[in-house]
Image 1 (tube, rainbow, N blue to C red):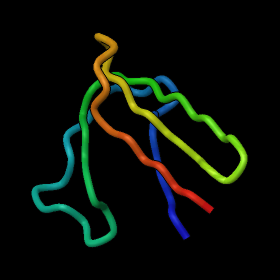
Image 2: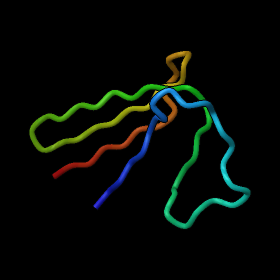
Image 3: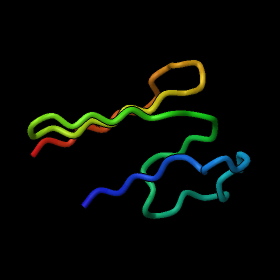
Length: 62
């Protein structure tokens, strides 16, 4: 099972706790958007910052 969380539905930006939680692999503070593509057996999620630069990518193949 893979879980991903992005966005805050219009809330303000906040800093993370002093130490990374055990269940998080990466953190990013900043406005961003995601594109999701599903094609045949592949799920792809791309995360971009507000300048359009790719900063994260997740690909899961069935």
